[in-house]
Length: 407
Ligand SMILES: [Zn+2]
Image (cartoon, rainbow, N blue to C red; front, side):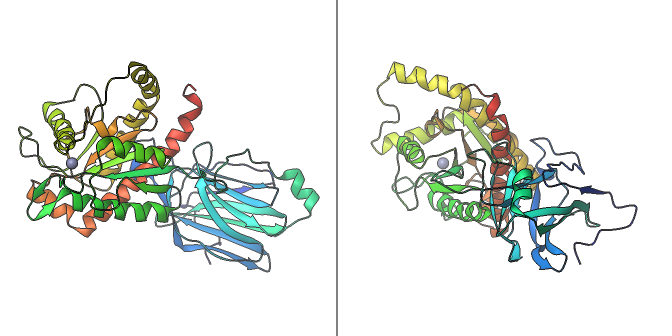
């Protein structure tokens, strides 16, 4: 019976009796800093349930590790809200209750992930606790029982507008735009019977599926076919999709002079490249555009350039944080990175000023080792998991930073 409280002294346990209005935080373990992706937790289906019992409705949530959390009730209509720090994946919770339904999952305005249960009538939270399990996981247990509307109204909060998980309107979830590199007459790198354009489209679709299943983001692709899309068009398609974050996916050949490297590289935009190989890589991508008859740079519009520079003072640090979080997430999944995996160059596809972006080289198609990884479903799943975890962690950190950014 998962809701039972462990009694042994070795189990660190926090039990908090809460009143209706209680908003509490249980930090059983130090919350991970942004770049410690091993600290990310998941909500698991096994051991999680919402059931009606004689003593009330029991909500049990199994987490892979303890995280800071809080709960409160909301009126109009009645809901139970649970916020968690550092949970990046939410499995479906089996809910068989006449009182509670859902949950809806979203990012809360202050950068936590949020579960919202709809309540069929006003309900009070009895006991609520997070207990550490023997296997290192954690169990959230709480009990709800119906109460009268006046008591509920007194104690329930009013959520500010845009407070996540409501899924109303068009734009309740952040939009991730995935950009599978190359396409159509531009195959990208070709080696060992593989080509970059096909591999990246397949990878983007796998990543899209996983991110959508996570329920925290909407996803759009800059191309969903073997189609040539100019670099500037990729940005305008991302913008049209309402991009909040942009990830370009590549697996190029090893640039000449880069040595015998293999592994993942994460690039951000910079006018001056971090190294010669990165500069050549960015130039080659622009050249592919030019070869197909598209000019990568339009006529200089100085006012537009100045405005873009102003916007970039916001997006540049956000892109850098995204790249750093990606790097940590790849590390946490034990995926091989190149030496100095964070690099920068003047990639045209990263030049959007209005949303943060990064370019991931998932490997070098010229490397036999990387080709084996890129075609291994297990490796690809690990890479997909890492990118999804990084997006969630980054979005949470980014939302928390938002009030500090100048408007
Ligand atoms: Zn490429």
